[in-house]
Image (cartoon, rainbow, N blue to C red; front, side, top):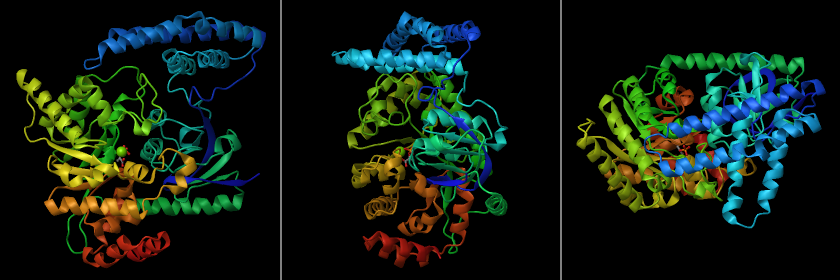
Length: 574
Ligand code: PEP
Ligand code: MG
C-alpha cells in the first residue's frame, strides 16, 4: 500500500531507494528468539562484548589525556569498571539468554531495565543519579555487541539505502559521514537540531520530524524522499515513481549548473562584496567547503572532535586538527568556535545529565567551569594560528563577565606558550556568538571587548521564542520570520555596522535562499553556511541590487503580522 508522510525537509533534493531501518543502540534493541543450540554462541558473544568494554575502559584509564580533569576522569572510569564487573550486569544476562532463549542484546536490555527500576526506588539522590552511568556502560556493551558503528545492519547497497531512524544523536549521525547513503529520514528533531545539522552535512536529501516513519515503514520498502518539501512517499506506484525520477534529474541538473559560479566573486549587482564562508564539523569537511567556493570557514564546530569516543582529544590532537584546517584553507580566514558541548551534544563520558540541558552547563559555561579543558583548546588554537588566518569564536555568551573570563584564560594560554617558547600568531582575533537574546540586547557593550560577532540564529530563535530546536512537536512553531527574531537580528547587524565591527550570520538562516535578500537588506555582508547551500546563496547575491532592498526591508521590520511578512518577503524575492 502506498502512503505519504509529512515532516520537515532539512536538506533539499530527491532520493529514491529502499528503506534501511537504523537504531540508536541503547534505545532500540532488536528482540529475536534463538534455538537452544545457539545458547552457547550467544553467551560467548556476550562475554566477548564485556571483555572488549573491559579492555576499552582500561585503555582509557592508561591514556588520560592532557587537560582532562584527571581525578574526576579516574573516578568515573572506576565507577564504570565496577558496574561492568558486577555480576548483575556481566552474569545475569547470560542466565536470561538461557531461560528466555533470546538474543544477547535483548537479555542485556531486560537486565538494564530491571536495574534501573531498582535505582528509581532508591531515596538517596546521588545513588539515583548513577542510573545514567548504568546506561552508559550498557550502551558501551551494546555497541560492542553490535560492532561499531553498529547501528546499520548492511542489507542494501549504500547508494540505494534510505536510512530510517526514530531518534539519533548528532554523534550517531556523524558516523554516517563515512558512508554514501542515498537519504536520511527520522521521526524526531527540529530543522535546526544538531542532529538535523549533521544530517544536512551528509549532503543527501533528508527529512526529520516525521513522527511515525520508523513504525510505519518496513525494511526494504521503496521510498521517495523529497527533502525540499519534507515529504516521504512509501511504496509509490509506477506513475509517481516516473514523475519523481524526472524531478530528480531536473534537480541534479540544476545543481550541476550552479557549479558554473563556483569561482565567481560574490558581489551584488551594485558591486557590493559579500563574503560566503562555510560551516564545518570535522577537518575532512574542508574539501567540500573549498569545492563550494567558500572564501573562509565561518564556523568550525569543534565539539564534534569530542563525540563518538570515550576519551577527550588531547591538545596535540586538537592542534593537528586545527592546523590541518588552517593549512588547507591557504590563508583564508578560519573561525574556530570553542567547544559548544552540552545540550544535545554530550561527550560520551559526560558525568551528569542536566535537567534542562539547553539552559544548562553548555558551551562557554562548561568551558569556564572546566578551565583546564578550555586552556588546552585555547593553546591548541593559538599554536595552529601560525599556519593560517585563525580566529577564535566563543559560543553562547550571555554576560560581560564571561567575555572577561574567556579573555583572561586566553591571556593565560598565551603566557604558558610564551614560557615554553612556543610560537603563535600575535593577531588572533576573538569574536563572540550572539545567540542568546540577552547577548543580542547587550551587543553594543559586548563589542567593546570583541573583534567581531557572529549571529547563531539557530539558538537565537530557540531562546527568543522558547522553542526547543530539537523537539519535533514544536518544530512548526520554530519561525525565523517571527518579528521578534527579525528585530533582534537586524539590531545586531545594525549595531555592528555602526561601530565598524565585522558581523556574520552562521546559523541556518544564512543558508536559506529565501532570507538572503532580507539579510542583505539588514546590512549583512558576511554569511556562513553549510557548503551545500553556498552556490544557491551566491546566485541570489549575484542577482540582487542592495539599493532595491531598503523599502521592503523597512516594511518587513515594521510589520508584526506573519502573513504580511511572508507577502513582503515574496515580493522582495521576486
Ligand atoms: C547557532 O546557534 O545558530 C549556531 C550556529 O550554532 P549551533 O547550531 O552549533 O548551536
Ligand atoms: Mg548555537
